[in-house]
Image (cartoon, rainbow, N blue to C red):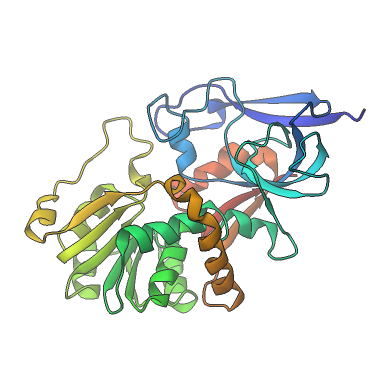
Amino acid sequence: MSVHHNRQFLLAQRPQGLPSRETFSYVETVLGEPGPGQILVKNEYLSLDPAMRGWMNDAKSYIPPVGLGEVMRALGVGKVIASQNPGFAVGDYVNGALGVQDFFLGEPKGFYKVDPSRAPLPLYLSALGMTGMTAYFALLDVGQPKAGETVVISGAAGAVGSIAGQIAKLKGCRVIGIAGGAEKCKSLIDELGFDGVIDYKNEDLIAGLKRECPKGVDVYFDNVGGDILDAVLTRLAFKARVIICGAISQYNNKQAVKGPANYLNLLVNSARMEGMVVMTYAPRFAEAAAEMGGWLASGKIKSREDIVVGLETFPETLLKLFSGENFGKLVLKVE
C-alpha cells in the first residue's frame, strides 16, 4: 500500500473583509488508498475564483458554505492514480471539486473526465470549464445579444469578462470593456478585438460611457457591482438587459452590500436585470463546451490563463483576484 503526503489548506475562520493567510490553517496529512466507490486524484491545477470568497461566509447561497476545519473548496483538474469506482480508471484525467490540496481522496461527486490530448489541462478550468460556461450562458441566454447592439462588460480583463466579450464580438455586437489600467485596456483591443475600452482607474466612468456608448447600452454584463453598476444604469438603452454575473467590488465589504441607486432607469427604459448561477445550466454544458471548443480551435476565441506555481502560495495568490492583478483566468499549479 502506497502512502501519499498531502498538503492541505483548511478554512480556519470566517473572514471579515479580505481573507488572509490567517483565514486558513495549513496541515499535512498522510493518505491511504481509496475505499469502495472512491478515487484518489493527484491534483495538477486548481481554479481560483471570486466565488471562493462567498463560500467562506456562513450564509445561505446557491451552494452550502465551506465548513470550519474543512479543506477549502476549489475546482480543479487532476489525474486518477488509484480507483475503486467503476466510472473512473487509473490514468483518467478528471475535473471536479478537488479542494486546495495535493490529492483528492473520496467519492467523485459531480466529477467528469477531460482529455489532455484535446486541450491543455488549464483550459478545462478557463474557456472549457466553469468560466467559459458562465460567460456563454450568461451572455447568450440571459443577455440575448443581437448583432449591432452595444454590449458593455465590467471586469472585462478577468476570466469570465474576457471570454464574454469575445463571444459578443462573434455575435456581431459592438463590445466595450471596462477594466483597470492602461495595459489591460490596450490588450482588450489589440488581442481580444474589443471595440472600445473604459479605464475605470484612470478616467471618469460616466464620461467614458458617454464617449463609447453614445446610443446607450443594450446589454450590460456585470462582474463587479457597486459604483460601476450604478454608472452603467444611467446609460441604458430601451429594452436593455443587465446580467448580474458577479459583484467582486462587494465581496469583502464589512458593511452591507451597496445596492443599485439608479435602478429606476430599468423602469423608464423597460429594461430588465437578471441574476445568473452557472450550475442552473449543467444539463447543457456539453453542447456549450463543444461550441467553445470549436471557437478555440479555429482561433475565434482566445483563452488567457494566469498560472501561479506552488500550492503553498494559495492565500496570497487568491488575493490577486481582489486587487485586479490577474489577467484572464487565475490558476494555481499544484507543486
